[in-house]
Length: 154
Image (tube, rainbow, N blue to C red; front, side):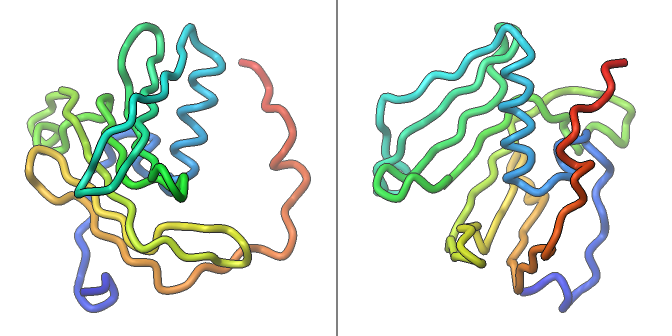
């Protein structure tokens, strides 16, 4: 079922990374890593649904933040487990408690030479939070040069 086929109720915002497309959120985590006392570890290889995958664990300020699993042959992301997002079931009660959020990436396809997952599903505590199927991807023909300027340090 596509989201245009039914009404989709927005979830409460669970933080700034939830609103970003998955790949931008991954880049954001790498920037966090650069500006923290964090590091990433890779491997050893594992299996997910019969596929050989390589996990990359991200630790920021000594805290395990996320693990992204990459297909060992294509090097494309297969699954990501984020350990820092608030539990959306508790936000309504005013409780800011962290819960593991698992996002799977499926059916990768090339759009103008950029390979993106066509289907993304996020689950937290057994509850499906997100189920997205890309119908089309359009990139801007030009980007404002200001997007690449270093932001003011405040």
